[in-house]
Every structure is written in C-alpha cells, then in structure tokens.
Length: 115
Length: 196
Image (tube, rainbow over all chains, first blue to last red; front, side, top):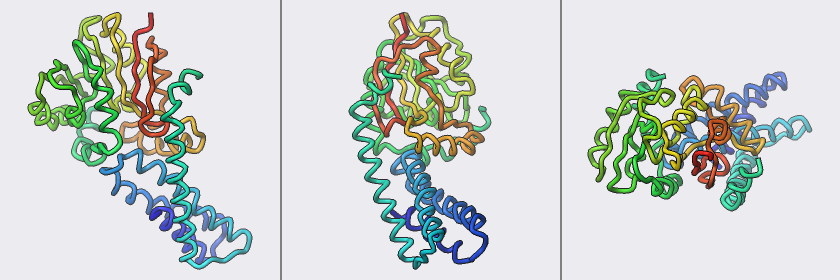
C-alpha cells in the first residue's frame, strides 16, 4: 500500500510541473522507482528480497500509469486522491499475489510437467 | 565472480536471510539429503540451520569471504560440514562420489549453469538426487518482464533473475521429479534425479 501510494503521488507531483507529457511520465516513473527500491529493501530482511522487490516493482510501474491515464483524459486529481488510488492498487496487488500463490501451490509441478 | 561475492558477503545476510516464507520450505527440501552430500554455494551459511542433524556434508563456495563468514554456523551444526573453496563449474571430486547434490539460490549466479549442472551430474552416483531451492523466471508475462527488467541491474552484481533453471537441469541430463512452489512460480523447491 505504501509503495503504491508513494509511487502514484510521485507521478502526480511530476505532472504538476506541467512539462511535456512524455517527459513527465518518464520522470514520474523514474521517481516512483527511486522511491520503491529503498522501501522494498527495507522489508527484504523480513519478507525476502524477491518477495518484496518483485511485486513492489510491478506496482510502482503500474499504479503511476493510472495518473498518466487520468491526465490524458483531462482529469485532475488531488495528490491525496492519487495516494489513495495507489494504496488501492497496492491492495489489489496483494490480493493478486495471494490468489496466484494459491494456484501455483496446487499445480506448479503439473505446470512444469506440461512444458 | 569471486570478487563480486566477496564484496556482497557483507550484506548477504541482510538481503537473503529471511526465513518467513523460505525457512519451512528449505527445511522440508533438505530433509531429503541422504548419503554423501555436496552443498553448492553455501554462502554465509544461512541455510545450515535448516540442515537435518547428523549429516556429513561437503559445502563449497567460490568466495573465500563467504566461507569465512559461514564458519560460525558450520561450528554450531550438530553434524559434520567441511568447507572448500571451489567453482561449481569445475568440481574437484571423482565421478559418482555423491548421493545428493544440493543448491540454494546458486544457479542464478553461476556464469554457465548448464556446465555446472553437467558437473553435478558427473559427481552424482547413478541413483543420486539433485535438490534445488532456486528462483527462476516467472511464466506470468507481467512478473516475467519485471524479472527481465530487474536482471538489467542485478546482472552487474552477479545474479540473473530470469533464468530457466529447470530447463538447464534437464539439458544437463536431469529428470525433474517434483516441483513445489515457495513463492508463485518464481521461487521453487525442486527434486531432480539423474535421467536413466
């Protein structure tokens, strides 16, 4: 949730600069990544490096794009709304990981046998 | 390669020492160690606490600094562990010398994984088994792409996040007998045997 909120708010802040749209998106993405990495490293000793880095990286790529999409459609959001949206993406990612984990726990061997 | 791991040894426990998810899976996998055991890539010895007691294990690593840091855990183990500094791609053991070869987050870091697997195949006895606790590239397109992206910078630190380790093992002549998911289809506990 924290990664989603911070990454999305970071993208919102770069859009507030009112620069070229593509440059803003790129800068926002870089800023989101720069914030996600230390956060992921902080929880790595507890959750594991891959377990923390992978979902947070996907989240930090996807959730800021929602701000870019909103700007493209002419929708201006408050930074708190952006952070809330990012947090919602974080919850979504958590749910996806839980569901996928359950699926893989049941049939990962079968999946590898079929390849 | 040894220099990279000598440098990484200092922070290794901080980054890779988590047992929250991995611990019980490692314990379950290592329970199947039998006979003469070769542990490849022992690192700072974070896996030693999951070894079944009373085993005789030869543990190797390419980094002298890693082995130095693993020394305390080696002494605490209730069994016999001998350390040797060795490259996984050039094992100094006779053919069919071991009954079990074990790897734990090792095959992402060996420059030529198929060559290393061929060495494991050579040193394993005809009915020998290979136990692997490894991370591989996800088949999920989004997670797979993220792992490819992560590899762009992790490669500089000696780790490839997007390897197809199971296929590499099969290429070297192993038959995969069981795969269990530890984390999605990325971190896996794998049993393999020498193909007949």
